[in-house]
Length: 137
Length: 238
Image (cartoon, rainbow over all chains, first blue to last red; front, side, top):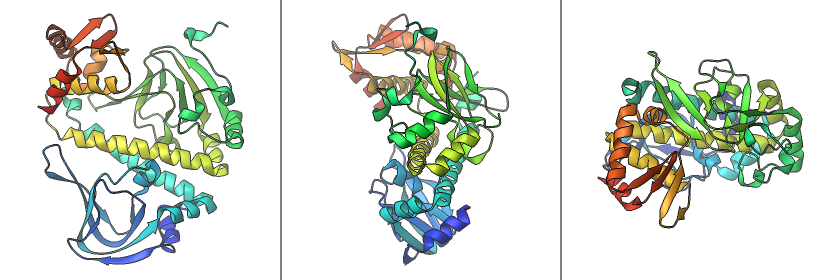
């Protein structure tokens, strides 16, 4: 099962929602009790830096899944999610996600691949963006 | 009984007393028996390379004891230490799952016991054991959160003094206070601390010396005593 098939399979469990510009899916610090499937539209993830100013972490597009990391780490949302163009999304509760994965081994491996891609993407960013890479000798 | 590098080697995970405190290893008997069949126990001295950046993934490394540094290099060969890995963590996970080259290098900084699992065996193990899959997802999620925190800190313009104070405070969090001070056994060289903070060895030596003159820390050999924790906190909050 690839990420597209995983997305389709999980779509059977969603609570659908239509969101408009400015709507919020969740705020940083709130409990992450499920995942969001972004079917179409765009969502901006932001966090506040030490000075309290908002910083954009990334933009999430249709076909992407939000929240696998916080769900498995059992941590609250690390960023806030705001809709920046009309978005069709679906929420899948944590117990439904876990039940689905319990019954579908191929779904479990697809989730591990998505999480691994997230880790690799971050490591790549650190390698290219770190000021330490230009100062250390 | 004598053991390599004077470390207490556990050849059977079932007998490991730390197992229940470690999220990945805290598996049921049946799953643990599956892992026992596919793992190879090895002991390494300080300075051993478990794997290197860009190498094709051979498998995963479960760190049982000792500590490992994870480093990455720029195209000019400059090195950055990303993390000091503690026992219980699994190394090389994302690369083994994706079948992509390792993103980082892993080098032991003290004698270590490592349980190695070949990539093909690990993927079959995940396929057969739901519980192991969930524990792996948890490990990956933790790594993801850690990497996100690191990315967020890249944009902050902290001074090297502030970064060093923060590092010492992080180490204090991992130990307990005795007789009014935190006793840190530092296994990293000044050069390695410099690679963690993106500065030079000379700067680290000078900053540690300044902290000692101000009686914030005391240094005896490889042991750093943090005697004024509040002063370090103040340096970070400026």
